[in-house]
Amino acid sequence: MMVTFFLLLLLNIAIGAFGFIPSFFVTALNIDWFGLSAGTFLSLAGEIIGAIIGFRLYRLGFSKANPAWLKHRFWVALQNQPPNRIFWSVILFRLIPFVPSGLVTAGASLTTISAWKFAIASTIGKIPAVFLEIAAVYGLAKSVSSEFQYGLLASLLLVFLTVWFVRKQKTT
Image 1 (spheres, rainbow, N blue to C red):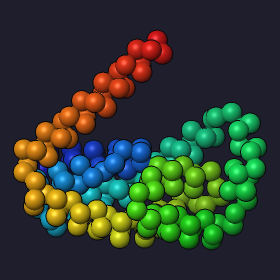
Image 2: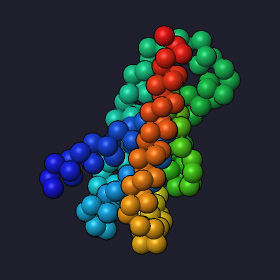
Image 3: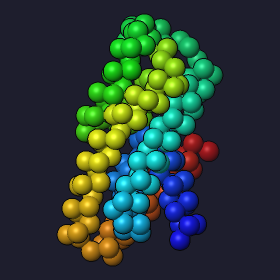
């Protein structure tokens, strides 16, 4: 049981770090395997730790990228925002449903906000968002069988891996 917990935690962290993969299905797994309380903790911990890791990875990646695209006026305006405005923007964007987490994380990593301020703002914004997701998933989990949920998750994973493999084959 402890191994499953840590594997799901790693999966939650990875999804939180990438930020473009919906965490809805993993949240359902968390609740199904560990119940509402521990499943909520698992989802919240994964989202928060994943966002912090993602912030560091995006910042590292952008530091190695060609800086020419950062000269666009949108990116220049974003980079010139004061850290306090960025702090509150991260909180607000985390609260808005369906705003991709990776977009918020990547955008913040291009600014002057410190990693600590980002972590605090991201956590403040993610807490209500994760609780809303938990409520939605819990309601859905009670109305849809576990077999259907696992089948849907496996199907989506298979589609994702197939698309990834095909794209990888086209580039080589």
